[in-house]
Amino acid sequence: MSFLWTTSDLMAAMHGRPMGNLPEGITGISIDSRSLGKGEAFFAIKGDRVDGHDYAGIAIANGAALLVVSEAKLPALGRLIAPMIVVDDVLDAMVRLGCAARDRSAARIIAVTGSVGKTTTKEMLRHVLEPSGRVHASVASFNNHWGVPLTLSRMPENTDFGIFEIGMNHADEIRPLVRMVRPHVAVITTIAAAHLGNFKDLEEIAAAKAEIMEGLVDDGHVILNRDNAQFETLEKAATALGVAHVHSFGSSAKADFRMVEFTGGSEGAVLWGALDGKTLEIQIGAPGRHIAENALAVLGAASLVGADMDAALAALATLQAEKGRGARHRLAIGSGSFVLIDESYNANPASMRAAISLLQDAQLPEGGRRIAILGDMLEMGEFAGKVHAELAAPLVEAGITDVWLAGPEMAHLRDALGDGAHIEYRETVDDLKEFALRSVAAGDVVMIKSSKGTGCGRIVSALLDTYPPYSGTERVE
Image 1 (tube, rainbow, N blue to C red):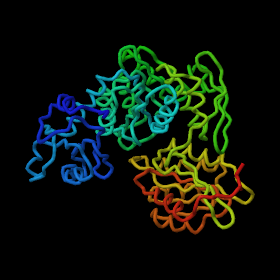
Image 2 (cartoon, helix red, strand yellow):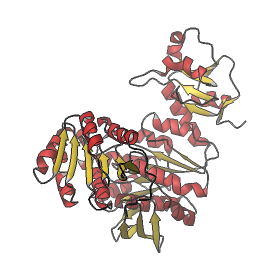
Image 3 (cartoon, rainbow, N blue to C red):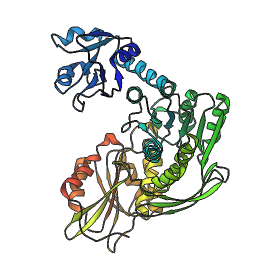
């Protein structure tokens, strides 16, 4: 059997002590007793809301090979008979294990951060690197103080390319994470007003994102967005940190990985890009200029880690948008269909504008409507009223007149739009959900965008549950 970790290596890395009859090794690592696979180790992490020790018995019943538990929690486990590794603190032990995984690996490592597009860029990297070797990447948005060490701990020794998403809500959060990851290449997608309520201004956000450069290996590379207003701030930070190689991407004539021309469509895009001294036609399977811009950073990173670039370019043509991040569904309604664009995972002013642009580019049959269903952007602090009201301008410029809103902050956008649009406003997501279910019609393109915490994903789920996938031949061209 092939083990992710032998038990002896596991104990040595975590400074743990054995209890019970331990297996020879483990096939994986889980922190969720519900999704745990047979033969995996269950790490009983204590979170903000739940304590994994309370689910130790369920983990064993579901096939856990062993438990990793805290010394202080042993009395609470009572008479549970199971193979265990006992440590001082489970999360700290997982951090040590993650560092050991990085130490033993010869993989080329890429780390991604940014205010917008981290997860999409990480998934794009996974997609384009898979033809070139064994890829290990973080699941979903596992980008915080437990997600990063968990992803590192799960990295097989024979990995060729490791891709890590690193997020933050405050300053000093990226620094310890990137020092575990120690990337060869760091990508900062952009700086925008995400988590603005926790910072004074965009310069503070840029400084926090710049922490990712502190963990670069010697002779490492950073890729920065040349079109972003904070480019010079980040470039100066790279120089101050002694980063060996600074690269840029974007439409600027000075960008190393440059967008020469972009042609958008409802299902994909064509990008002419200048890369490594060549101008290439690049087909991208997912729509949106923001996707194409980040594709340049992805191709740049792929070239820096020695990927097969012909295979990487070919892979971009088969890229598909992820759930909550632009995934499209054609759903049957009456004798026709409508298109649902799911952008419900997260939102800030920059990503809202990108989603509005996606909706603008969507093609409609005669009589169809472009409908923007928007929920609150969270963590905007004292700027909340202003940034929500400012969404009126891109909606008007895009010619989107059907706007359905939910949440207290979206009242500011309702007021800013005035009488020039067909506005439906509800205080709660569930009230808007009921309206949406009875109001969509054949020919519509419906885009749903909000911060995840608002629950607008429930509108997506309700539409998917109510209207089946369309199986006819009608198409929106």
